[in-house]
Image 1 (tube, helix red, strand yellow):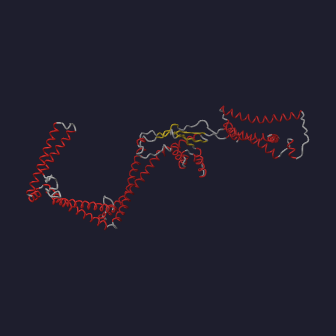
Image 2 (spheres, one colour):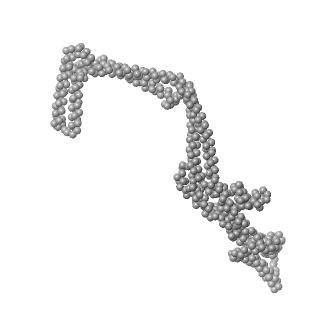
Length: 540
């Protein structure tokens, strides 16, 4: 650490030997720099604030129904793109008479680039307030440029949306006409194809293989119904031929009494008994077995059972006395036998109808199988035609919908309640310049000059080094230093060194005094630039 301090001390002592060169360079640079700063031309800044008013009742009502221009969502982008395009900047330059200073195309191109670099656009999307700034050496020119910028923006912002909508409407109309033509051609192709292949067109039940499978299923169902009807018919004929039982009309095998319990005379008693039992069941839901009505009905059922047995015995006896006549009469006069014969005849008709249906299904299957190579090709071609038609129809419907939405958006843009551009802070001709910041530049000049003077002294000390201290001598010769003889200054020498130090500090103080004077004059409002410009003009 001691060595580093010693090294720094040595550098400073060596640079101190060239202090007058350094202070002279600092003074010269400060004078030249401050003169240039004070002679810099004044700049005047003109600004204007624009408010994009979107408080419209149409926008929430048209949300999701019509297209919206979206000007507010990209306001900053719209401003910058509208104002900073070269055609607009050329137009502004001509309107503001800036092109009069450009004699050649190169100068005009430089003028446009400078104009674009001086324009500043800033704002906040939340409040929709945007600020346009422009600076120039002449206040009138700056205000004129800002006025022309605002005029250009308002003209284009009001016309762009309508021009874009008109272009969109034209494009949609052209596309709709083209797709309408395609749609008509597709419809005509489908119609002609159906006319040529009307005999093999797929039905509403599906394609060829679906219809073939359906025909096989229908045939199986019809054959099953036919088989069931034939079995039922044969059974009815068998029952009618055997006398409704299988052991004779009045065979003794049906019951122990030798009669037939299914005879009409006996069935009457069974019906009454069954009816009485039903009524007893209903009474027992609310009463007991000892209820008078229940007891009376039980007695009536017993009487009917007795009469039934007597009737069965009577019929059995009659059948035994005249077996042949009884059997023939019973077979001819028995209503159940007649009913069986009638049902058998109806089943014959049903079987005939089912046979016709089965034959028809077989014929359909045969016809479909003969077209197994033709119908799938027809269906595939029809599917392709229908697909083309569906695609064209979908695109056509979408284009119609978009045209209506575009038309609605155009009507909304042209209404009075749409987005309004309000100038809330118009450009004003500035009375005082806004730049340059001479105080800041003067400070920079002072710091740079001091650094340059000190750096020059250090550089000269390194180019022409001198031995300042014992370590320098030891490092230069490589020999040990045995002793040091101090220099004794007389009074004249000490006064001379004191005078030199005071002169150096005075020169450095003068630099700071001049700088402080500029600061004081600046805050006092003294126009040093104008005074110095008059002096320089007089000298020139």
